Amino acid sequence: MSGSSLDGLDIAYCEFSIENGQWSFNVIDTDVVVYPDEWIQEIKGLPVSSAMSLWQSHTALGHYFAAQVNAFIARHSLQGKVDLVASHGHTIFHFPDKKMTTQIGDGSAIAAVTDLPVVCDFRSGDIADGGQGTPIVPIGDRLLFADYRFCLNIGGIANISCKTGEPRGIVAFDICAANQVLNSLANRLGKEYDDGGKLAAQGTVHTGLLQKLNELDFYRYDYPKSLDNGYSRELILPLIETFDISINDKLRTYTEHIAAQIAAHIKAIAVKESLNFGSAEKMLATGGGAFNTFLIERMQQLADIEVIVPAEELVKFKEAIVIALMGVLRLRNEVNVLKSVTGAKKDSVAGAVYRP
Image 1 (cartoon, rainbow, N blue to C red):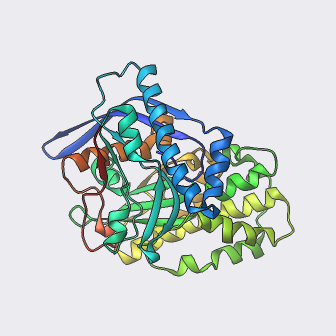
Image 2 (cartoon, helix red, strand yellow; image 1 turned 135 degrees about the vertical axis):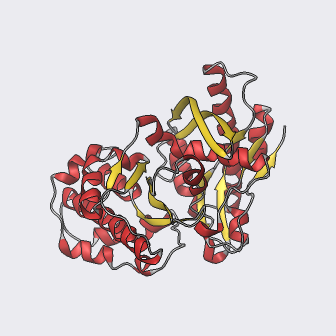
């Protein structure tokens, strides 16, 4: 899994079992491979690069992914034990309204170099079928994390899923830009990210900026809905820059914005889906933002819901685990992308399969 915050390539070696229709999983080995600076700069520049540069990077990143998979297998002595590689790729463009999405990292290159079956390109089929193509991890929320009404991922973009109470029913969507914005602001203070939200906690909420953020058009749309990675770069950060306040105040205000939007969307789901629940309801929080304790505290206060931050391994690797599950489901020819989440015409068995 390569997420929009570009903090590294998450690799998880997982085993899945199914008994009486109930899936379970075991995570055996994990690594985060930090991207070299040259890859970070190249990927960041691709949205405005030439078509030739985009496709050269697509191929090169596939070979890079494959090299990292081979190194992971050697490092953990997994030779002969791997059935398949499931790769999300790295999203460069995501425009469902134009019926297009682009995740680079050539699956055929991964298959050729690793000599293993590869499943990738999980989003494009759903978009072709009229869906948003995202979020796709709710299939894992339904099959692996059924004990939680809500599952929240706070990565570069924050997204949420909710079991609606209908038989096997679930809805999910993107809420707002999250770590993409917080990390960019922290970078200006010489920090890679706002560790535990300590920088934000030192600031003050600027009510004018908070109001402008909360009035953005995206929040008026009903779900299913999704965000492109360029949203924060092209709209959020320029808006924040129009306010002459300290970086700490900007961090504090945007942290409040994230917490407020998550709380508001939880309440909106409850109304739309006619759900009855109180503060005893639990929400699983994963992704890098789950380590931002100040954000978690504000979110819990505003949403009046118990937020569960699990063990570090699950926080970091939940998306990689679900991508692995999606690859398994694809090879079993079983549904792995849900129309109730994306708004597509039908559930789909998504993913391109490359064999060595």
